[in-house]
Amino acid sequence: MSELPETQSEEHVEEETRAKHLALEQDVREAVWEEDSRWLSRTLNRLHPADAADLLEQLSTDDFADAVTLLGGQLPTEIIIELRDEYRVEAVDVLPDKTVAAVLGELDSDDVTTILEDLEDDRRERILDELAPAERASFEQGLAFEEDSVGRLMQREYFAAPEFWTVGHAIDHARDNAEELPTEFYEVYVIDPTHRLKGQVPLATLLRTPRDVKLSDIMQEIQSGITAEMDQEDAAYQFQKYSLASAPVTDGAGRLMGMLTVDDVVDVIQEENTEDLLALSGVNSAEGTDTVLDSVKARAPWLAVNLITAFIASGIISMFEGTIDQIVQLAILMPVVAALGGNAGSQGLAVAVRAIAEREMDGDASRRAIVRETLTGLANGVIFAIGVALIAGLWFQSAGLALTIGVAMFATFIWAGFSGVIVPLGLRKVGADPAVASSVFVLTLTDVMAFFSFLGLATLILL
Image (cartoon, rainbow, N blue to C red; front, side, top):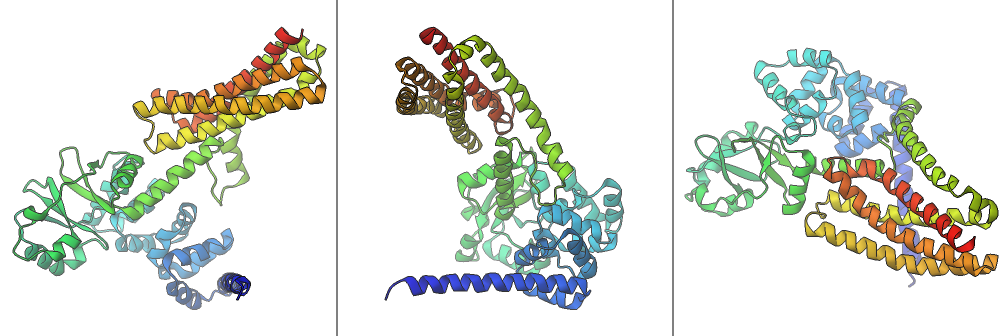
């Protein structure tokens, strides 16, 4: 039989699933409008917290706020923490202080920090006053670290054991103190009497080892070396490099302070990638709840910078005003050189920024990248210089014009490939973020080269 019926069946299943999801969305809206908190709570609890969060995020801003108000303390904490940042902030703003304090008591310390850091100072103090002194001190510890540091992200619940303990001792301790252990953990961290980290024992190793074996005999060396003051992006790189599921976090003296888990690190990687992608386009924010004013504030400064660079390129063109007056065809062909050169520069820039983010542009790798992108520009320059020269020559029946645009195109492509790598590397060298500032400089440099080489050669060759 042919595969067409099977394909149609798959499409039918997808359509049915989409229809059910849309119907559920409408049911949730109607439950909010009718203030049916019982049905809404029961429905959300049946779903995975991430799916329930997605469902709530499909509501309008007013309906979402009404849903949170309607549920109040019945809104599961797992759903709150799964909400995207802007929706989580909105949900916490709607809930009463006592409800938020109760929510904090059910969360792991890293999730508590995530919620507390979004609150206004006055409200944060009121909510912390609702907590026991020990809980408050623990939560304030996370807020004491820098915003993008590992200390803000780490979980302060972990399972640590002295190096002289046996496997049996560790297992019995875990069973007797289950409520004090983190919800999920993958290693037992081995410490000395001063709480300095000595090594770790994966749970798989622990369960396969006889009870009378000491932890010090089976512990593994810690590869990551993550500290509480480290930047979250650097910690995420350690997770990627060593394929970690979790990692211990220490202070400057090597004492164990907490642990990072891969679910939090995945969020960091996604956030950093999104920031870099937006920054390359000169955009600082792209939240679904952004107002028009928010969008204007985020984008207008970069448009202003581009306005200045555009006038720089226009200044180059004005230097050859007399040449353009005499050879009108130049005005027709100028955008071709600038557009192709700008695209070539943007391609090299995207590759370079990604490589820098992935720590692939250190040492000799950066020199190889410069050579590679320059030679790539040279090769593409040859290909497109010949193509553009042939088109221009046939169009305007001018060998001189064909030679001019061909040579200009060749030079622009080489320069675009070179600047697409050297600019982000140079910005990183002086401490600037390559993703944020590179595109403005690269596009300006390629435009300047395109116009100067094309119009300059036209002045020398055609006049």
